[in-house]
Image 1 (cartoon, one colour):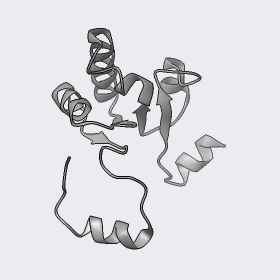
Image 2 (image 1 turned 120 degrees about the vertical axis):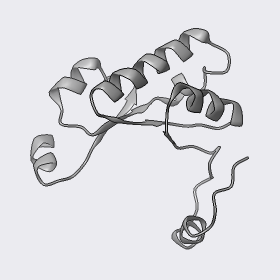
Image 3 (image 1 turned 135 degrees about the horizontal axis):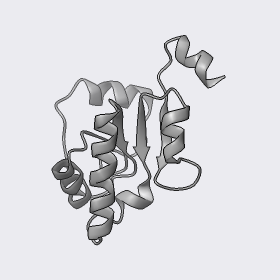
Image 4 (image 1 turned 30 degrees about the vertical axis):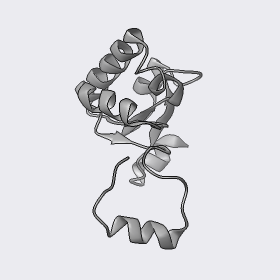
Length: 116
């Protein structure tokens, strides 16, 4: 079960938060260490003040609960800027890198970060 995995020290994040089955009750009922804000929410940041407010409140709530937050699917510098301004410290997506082999990943990890 999810609880047994947590007891083994495996950290889990709630995926696709903000859409589908990733509900607020999941934050209470499951032993998670963080959540991932759904790509559909991230993509609306540059054009929707409502999306920015929602992400701001998700980040505050997660912070208050001691959860880490990853923004999924960041694909542009503009999205990254909004996420940073809102206080999101972790992201994933093609804006950072396309999928790469283990060898290339090792090289990337050992190099200074490059952005857009």
